[in-house]
Length: 420
Image (cartoon, rainbow, N blue to C red; front, side):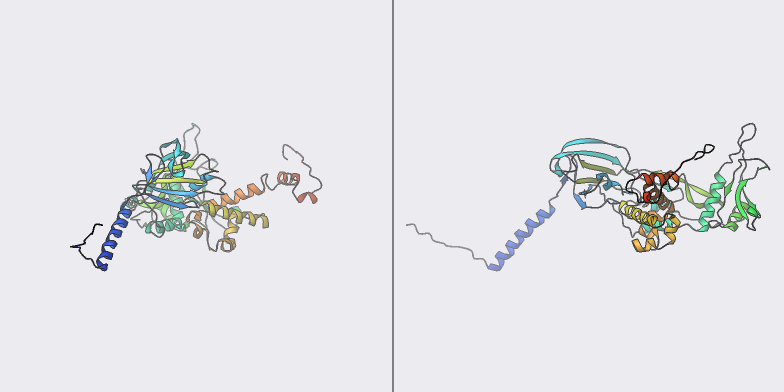
């Protein structure tokens, strides 16, 4: 049997051994952290950051390397609703293609749709520091969004008076002379005393070339509750003291058709409306949609690049808020079929349903009352598709589920002189 002799063996302390072992483990963990992990959506399309959500996102995050937002659309009626709340204009140049095997969704076939951000529009008097703000994500507490709130809330009489004056100044008179030549008359302020045999005075904006008994000259009605008559008189007479606005924060979505800024500005001492300028953007929006949504109830939005402009204002009302508001309106109409947008705002429905004092506190986009009018009109159309007149009653009685049939015994429709 061979004897093995252990000689010249170096001894180590237990503490030294534990320290060396700890260093090795730390080096391994550091190497794991330094390893870049990518999510592959096609063979060439890969991103580092993936965000999962179950609700639509108004301002999806982006980066130069790309950010993917994955929407879980289980139970949704329409998978495209995932993109309906996006405030960016996402219908820029691009195209679509079918991918046979999408790696991220387990190798199933998907549709890839690529579009560019269309950027924003802004007033020519806008502050360049605001317009040139780049961003990859949105902070709702930022100064930019505070400016949007101020911009939306700028509905004072003074602002409306300036807008009315500028719009009238730029309008043309529709009157045409006998030789079919358009009238070149300028806008001027007029008034009607003892209007409709009352002691009130009605103000209007007419044409300075109007002659008695001539029809179709310019006539713009003035709403006294929205207009500062004294300021309007001074603007037309040229005696108004105008405080110049050094900066403008008017930023509008690319889809807006507006050609002029709503806010008044001064140019060489004259009140003017700023021209609206377009600013394009190169950020890519890539939608990955499985062909079989039932088997794979997920869709992805991949954003690549940096927006070279401030975030567009929140013009679109999120679908969730819109649906809740629609339910509120329909309930109000069922209780009182004379419900209007004004009655909803003046009542306590908003406070009771949303725990907010005004609609703009629910979402900035609801500051425009026209959106509420649209939703009220839509609710009436759903509840009374044939109106609330004779035809509406006839349609309602014809419905088997209607309880009105117990009260209406006979409906006659008579036509007298082509009138029903």
